[in-house]
Length: 101
Length: 467
Image (tube, rainbow over all chains, first blue to last red; front, side, top):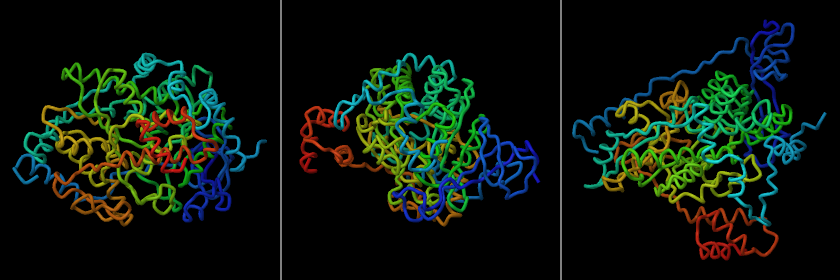
């Protein structure tokens, strides 16, 4: 459960499929335009899935469904990609070992 | 309360943009299709010297130029005897937020503050977001970045997710959207709701700011090598990088040939939800480069200040696998971990250097910062997860959205020429599509400027189109 002034992430549909512009590919036209933003919870308390209001970094109020409390960045460098090391071997082989360019 | 529907908000576009930029673009119109581009560029109130002063004050620019000795040597091993120009790179990653885009942001934010705006809004999924956020932080304004980040399954492009993180780290609010051009609708709403300044990528403030890059290059090479570089390669997406750099080179008296380079994403739709995460490059690609070169005015400004066909001498493409390859080469042979998208011009330069003599100079005019998500390893791991095959072979066989082909040998990395005359004809077609009168001599003169082509070429193209 999130309490007032907790930092959270919300989600809201901005345009439903039928409200989208006509010039789109079918796959895009068939889905809503969605939006995510973070901010400080303005409601006294809320559960995931509740519709809430947050105050964003610039001080705007945004409304949406609460989807994450204490949001963090899960970015990383991804799984092992063996091709990258193979590129290194080729490059050094050509430059320093006389292999064919 | 105003009507917030899509139709109503986009219907208020002209007024919203006018209020959010403080410029009435109507005064530059010259009748019919023509407008006075130089008046737009010269009317900002900021000279090149002013842009330089503002950038110095806010820690932008004056970036170093590095000679890439090992990449030059590698190119010479791939080239015919006597061929292989010296390859240089301008390390734009050393700007505070990690890219040349800060040159584009500095004066916009400065001007917004001077005009009394409390904040800035920018619609961008790229480095420009971090650039605006950084300048807004330094100059004490609020900042909202609107980005296209996720597909309809909520899966984010790692590169764009990283840029959101960076913008938030620099104090900005980030609105992350799913795929679609209606990002512009949300941006208009933000501008209207907040009364902030539209720090558009395509304003004269932004493009004027990039002129410092070309100006620095011209002077740096005169000092360091005693001569102009022979070729400057600019990555091309919206066209602002090439436009501003070329104008700056000219102002420095530099005669270098200017080559545009884009990642070849032919066949992928930029507005497709399904294809969004099947591409590994979210900028500097043909999906932006070609439409913006041939139809500059479909940006978020009434008239774009980025008009690359006026300036490019040549336009080449490189494949995704080739840019990843050169990104790894830059790390492994030159000790510089940058990019990957910012190495598009370097991939092209590596190939073009092989056509040139050894005493000639070619410059890739940018690098960009790298980090988790925005790096070849997570990008390639993400591609593989999305069913993209990673192969070694001849990159010309690469099919965007299906595979990524790394050159099996470095000599297989080849920049490929686009037909510039085809692009010029395409621009003429787009600009005359709604023409409701017999074309005037003034409009023909305008099209000659727009395409950097002669009168015979423009008249022949118009005849072909039946205009």
